[in-house]
Image (tube, rainbow, N blue to C red; front, side, top):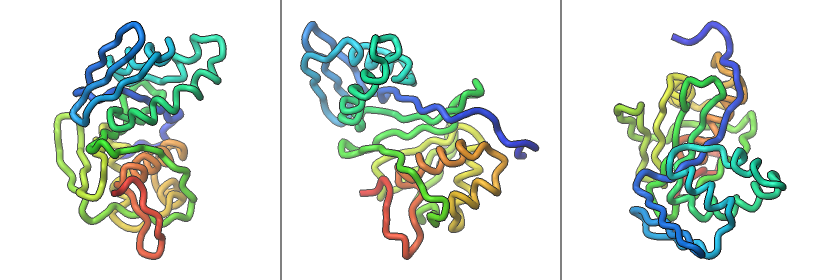
Length: 212
């Protein structure tokens, strides 16, 4: 059952390290090791060390860590190349500031996995790929596809509602109008699904998001 009024709050974009990733820090390096190999960071800055320490514990907002430093905005920009380099070790979680838990999470399934939620046009015609497999698990509904480099877990009904809209071709604008969610929440869920390859343009729309 959907709520009678649009969901309030704003999307919150969180980052964490995959559960299989171990972090080993020394005086001049940080080495991360997981199922897709290792990454060595030479002479990482204090903010990078702190972000990775917190990401190993669970989902965080990197900007909150950066805010503890003198030039918070500048520090946050400097973090992006490192975080992008670690995409294959990173879980991206979309939440909302209502303290009810995450909406969905996206985990890498390949060393080549990168994740960049693009802006979507209101008239992009999207649909769930036909080869997506849905599996019910303890954490929610899992989405996987042979053509995708990611696995998505839907943690809350709101994310399931958006996926259900993709059973037929739909535009982000139409999905926003049809669902009782804050427009930014619907847009955020669609962007994450598209970046993970779980929402793709229908025939005649050549772009492919998050696919091999």
